[in-house]
Length: 503
Image 1 (cartoon, one colour):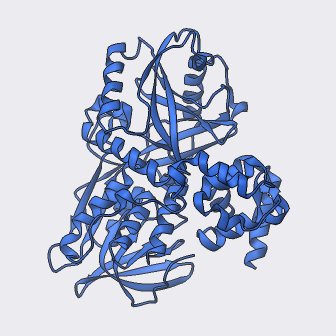
Image 2 (cartoon, rainbow, N blue to C red):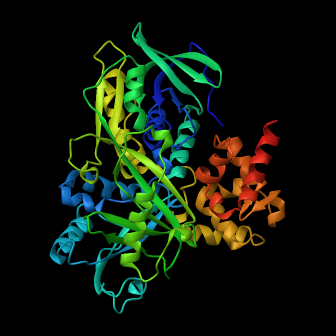
Image 3 (cartoon, rainbow, N blue to C red):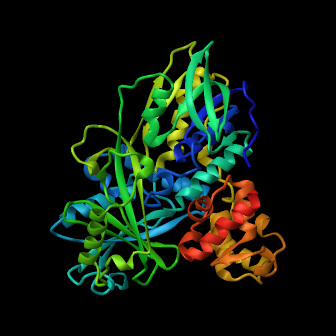
């Protein structure tokens, strides 16, 4: 699926460069406002930062320490909006915060959590409660020195699927989405941008009334390819995560304070796994080549081993990933203190084709960022419709009463011959659109070849046909997380299958 095809020489209203969460969100918003949109991504959707996050929709509790009250408030409001828009891929999670007197005084944490509960008009999520960790079951996994703590709410999100759902909605509203398509250069000509795009060995030109630079870590590179200069800079910060076996009972996550005053999350992941991170390391290399290093592994394991009864070594690591956060450079001294807010730079006056570049941002605020980006382009598109995404669901998100458990029960009634784990997988990833993929399948064998775990040929075919998936990585690690549950041989079978289908 790619939306309408644009031939060489065609003119679009908006050429969006970058298929991460900001680019996909802007393409969706713009398409819904009646603009003709082309979204291009040099790799796969969410291949960079947007699939390598901590996978949380959250206000950013620790940002309160840096007085980022506006950002936290906006993020908390957006947390509620997104929970309603995509309840299949976003769901509430309770976080246990053990109190460590050596890090922050108890009164300060209480104050922060009070603000967190009340800044953003919390509606659906339960508030904070104090914990006696010596008696409460959620304290059983923690080191015995933790006797007091707190529990508060935030939300989990499947980050890469959030990007794909925005791109799907954009395409359904008329946008064209071209992955594996690189911006070679762009120039202003006769009141338009003339952009040279390359997909494989083929180059073509597209004309656009406006150019949106949502390239994330590559934002400065795209500015250069457009022949412009910027007074702003992006600051690259590496964040790495470990995937380990889940080692506690219950659905809760943990927020652990470290001696350097940073915090790490220890979250349930994919049922029987745990996601641990993140680090904050200044990064100066190529974003495409980012990987976790030994110091980061040692750092994360040391925090775990100081905080929990279960002790971990390198042999326990199931997987790991690293991403580069393209933060707006506000000259903060440390990587942890750099703002997570976003900044726009608009290059263009009346009568010229604008270039709108985005610095910074975070997954939780992508929808608001997209809305504000389009608002800045109103002078160039005076007949553009107004904002609309605040009350709109994403594909698959129109579940009964926005309640996933109700939907899971409905799937059980409709597909009694499929295992509960398989139904839950389809329900979580595809929401209300799961039946369109499952069709009349009565038993798992009806879904075609079984590759291991919960992966069948029918799902692969759907991802290739409808979600721009082309490589094994697209399917196993971004559109799904099947890669965590398959053996190396099974993953190789998927690659062979895709190659055979493409031949």
